Every structure is written in structure tokens, then in C-alpha cells.
Image: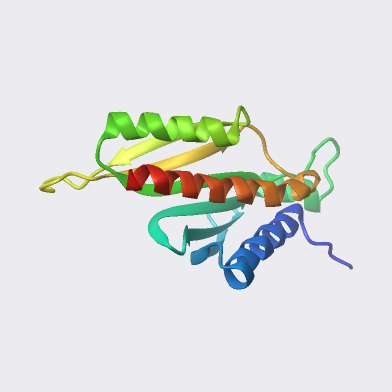
Length: 175
């Protein structure tokens, strides 16, 4: 039996190759963490890479790809009427001080870069008892649909937007 790679595996390799080229060949980003999991509780797969700008490591970007059992089964079993696809998530992690001003500015940055393609959420947390409270802001870019190999050619542009977001967030943090 010949086994073709799944949509998940093909997208994972495309994302991984593009990001590692930006790290190793161009020096545009620095990859700081990698996750490649089989989630046994839901029989799913998850892949994630985190990166920073080499000259500004205070803000982290994370791109993750997830395929749940339903996604994988639809493809492997070639279920009629099912279209194999994966969930793509993009997150940015940064510390902020002035919640109202900085969160509003972050929303504007995301709207400017991503246009109407996405929704965004910001989740704030802080360590109780800190003398000067910094809030950890987890910024998630939410895509309204799953992706498949038809979006493979969009990966370079997606990653360019991710890097542009990192650069704009850096400018906000330095201001």
C-alpha cells in the first residue's frame, strides 16, 4: 500500500521550510521553539514554531497547524463529501504596561496589516504582587476557515504578514 502525505503533513513541511529558510539563510527571524505533537486524547496532530526578530527578542510570534481526528480520518478514509483541511493559528506574545492605549494600538496594527481577512483577540494576564505590573498580552489572529493545499501558495505572504506584524509590534513597544 502506498501512503500519500496528508494535507497536514504537506502544509507543515511548507511552513517549516519557509520559516527555517528565513532563519538559516536570510537571518530575518530566529526560531526559538518548535513543537510537533500527537495529541492522544483527541487523536490529533499539532505543529508549532515560535520565532522572534533577531534584533528584538521581546516579542514572540507563533504559527501553529492542527489536524484533529475528524480532519485526518476524512482524508485517510476518503470520506465522501468531506474536504480535508487543517486549523491554522497565529499568536504573538508580548508584555505591555498601558492596557487601554497599547491594546487599542495593537488592534489598529492588526487591521492595517491583515485587512479584513481576520479577527483578533487579546488575552491579558499579569503576576499578582509585581511592583510595576506588566501584562502578558497573547494576541491571536483568528482565521475564519480551515486551510488545505489550495492555500499552499499563500504561505509566503502569510509569513510576510507575520513578520511585518512583529516589526510593527516592536515599534509600538519601543515608542
